[in-house]
Length: 312
Image 1 (tube, one colour):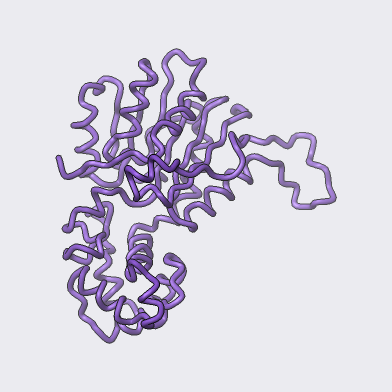
Image 2 (cartoon, rainbow, N blue to C red):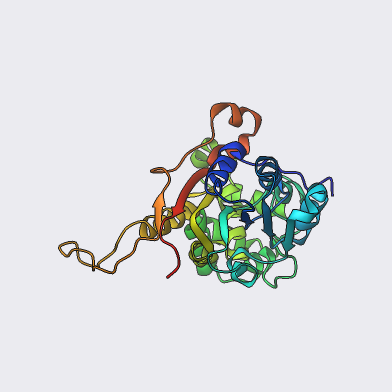
């Protein structure tokens, strides 16, 4: 599985945050909810010699690659072919010292033309992280009505030209591959916009990928389930790569780290409990030296929260 290689984003800070939540545990248990190629987990094993990790990924190819990369830790790693919102199938409430979510698409998925994620390389209009899922990008591009297609491109891609792009796609049907779609999108943009945009199709491809994989729909329930699974002092660490993801992460962490009464003029009820505290305010970004080595890390936003209230 040499083609499935991925540089873990903000690796050292991620591992520092997770390890700090397990400093008083003899055999900490972590969940890597998006195992990918296993880069973060490999670093975590090095940092915490007694740690056990449960790794999830909806991409079967990623799991195979991770198992090969982490073979020397096989007695400390358990993997499952699951979406991260299914984490309660394999972990118990209050059992984890830390949880990591590395959201979005990985470099190997983008770089493999056959997966259909890349607008630079010719491949099928697929974009499924789990190839067993029914919905593909081809179905959306070639069969959805124009209004629904425009809505997807606008909502998930923040694309101001969504209606023009959707109209151009519908007029060009059938669209058979990724580079054909990329050209259609570029041609649909006004010349002034096209001149200012390095990758005209990037937002449209992002939007289709998010819709195909229901990416935004599963983040909140997964985060809440992860919080339930944390032991006292355990850390929730999340890397997000676009504004839609990060808004959800920010909101969930904020809501779980404050008492909500529903009325600003009312004090919190006496039995109110805040489950989390923010480890730091706002989001951290990659440092300049990391961006020089891995330009794809540029959009990363890192947030972390710690469980401060145990199970009742």
